[in-house]
Image 1 (cartoon, one colour):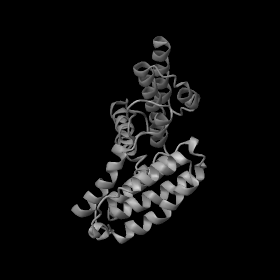
Image 2 (cartoon, helix red, strand yellow):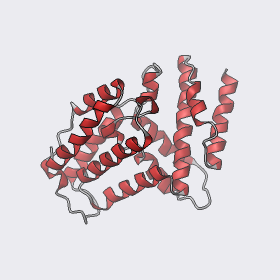
Image 3 (tube, rainbow, N blue to C red):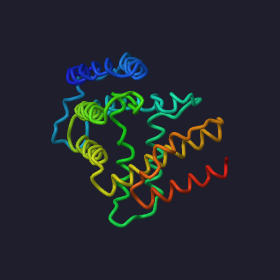
Image 4 (cartoon, helix red, strand yellow):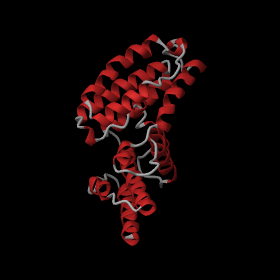
Length: 234
């Protein structure tokens, strides 16, 4: 494992002591299974346009955690076989792919943003309001994790693109960010509806948490469609 990656994880590991017991257990479990990162991970020049093969595989190995980490909200509600973080991001990417062209919105950028918006959770885990962690602290942890991941990738334009997309989403600073944030909420309530129908769960809290918070017409329209289907299924 590269020295940069090891050192960067030390302060992140310390965060778990102030989190809820669930979050702490999840965090310690993930870091007890760290990927075997090559010492070459940070050797790529910061001016290169693409990562070295070693850096790329180290980065992808870390991203594997997104496939195996279950979304915490569903776990807490006792959902059977809940989706992973990667499952959630994938369908958001598909949402961006199939959505209608919107004035002033770069659809390709939305697709990219959807597949990186939760990428820092490969290190910090899926932090939810139930963990008792403030939004500022959550953002700080995720920014630190993202910086570590970009270093692991070797810097360069690809790492910068990931960082810029993540920051744009985090700050809700563009039309694309607003669209993708709406897709984040739509994907969640659609998944909640599917779990309600498949497992007989009452997941109304997830619908209530998004009510009135959609920022775009496409988000409002898709959320309305999900709500309509939920009424018909009840």
